[in-house]
Length: 629
Image (cartoon, rainbow, N blue to C red; front, top):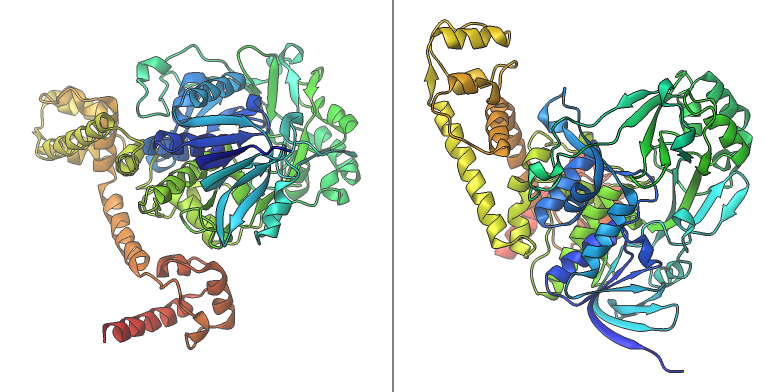
């Protein structure tokens, strides 16, 4: 039988949010790329929540955009409601979140993929990795096709040996009833890849015509929409928005769940995978938070051209009859028709400590990995990893250094560092609390932090980069002007102070001193700032934040300097930790398993103490003296 053999630079396995970013990055960098998917109709599918962004996740989308990725542009073109979360708090935790039209989101991303030069899309199941002498050289498909490649990127999402479960029903399918990928796990294991089993879930969908919205609280979008992408014209996203709706579970809901826990696959032992702690099912919530008599439930439209609505906050794997009774106790859902049942999904993924910070496997060269396959959860976490994996597979083939972002400069850096240095016992979810330097890593300044890297690798064009440099210049010049501009004790100034409940002036004050007052900011001082230049909104925002939080920012910058020193202390790749005297046995075992690149990374490994780091530091200094001698 004749065998099809083809040659590509890069093979991407999977076309979910990670696979799309990986494939687009590689193709845009000029590398001949093929992206495999079990279904072309499922490109950038949103099988669970119909939204992009949210707390900390909005930061990731902004960072993906700054580096030259597509997710931000795609949601800007297909959203139906947008909201900036946490506005009442400081700018470090402001996060953009947008409801997507799910079918339009998928359709647009597919169109982008299909019209990208150097990118081929292929519907086929990849069954085997081709590995020769520790180097990945391509893949084999179920149909017997051989696709040789210089690098392979795994972005299989939740499809490997996927099993959808509710009640006693167990279907070996991927999400939304799509075909699962049932062969690749065996090939990965044969090549020494350690696999784990995780679980996630999704709630039911209901027909909006059968929902009583009069019993719910309407949730509208922002009056002035802020785009995700720095390249989107803000005026283009000022659209008529669709409402979401808030309701709550109650004691009757919880009693039905408690009465049927023995029928839940989660508690009967039918589900073996570990689920996400920070996104629990409704039965998990009722058990773990027994003191709460209600939980929030959000009704979210799945799109403009469908009546399906997503019941956010009530994912479940309970049997169909229990779901029917449970959902009907929620105010507004008493007569709701369930279009799709809730279900849990189990899938194979890897232990991510097998990866370098570049997302290349430590033991298999030219094999990279991104997305939920790395033990994370969420569309945004997936896309971020897919982008970095695609960039670094490309950098390797182009003979360039990998792009490794650190914890002090990006949420993406925090995400990847946590995955490759910390033990992942459950699907990893990004949260603002995980970022030590979150005042510096705001979503509003992602372009100022990361555009330069996108430009260096080749995903950000010259015009965009020059616009960034101009923006930086405008910010610096305006901060300097505001610092040296003084206002006196005049009637207009005192009137403005009174208007915003601010203490009247006793003497002249610089504008920057006024901006630092909690109740004032750069924008509200416009009436008394006679020489203010006309500046874009995003520049004004940066001026205000940088001045208002100057002391905190300076303090965090000093912390970053200390962090950078530790990150700069490289550890030789061939170090024998058994030869390091006074290291505890547990530390030796963990350091041998993780093989950290530097002291900073070593210090974040669970089981490695500060005392172990001190011992290691002394040993490395001794090695340095020996090599110098």
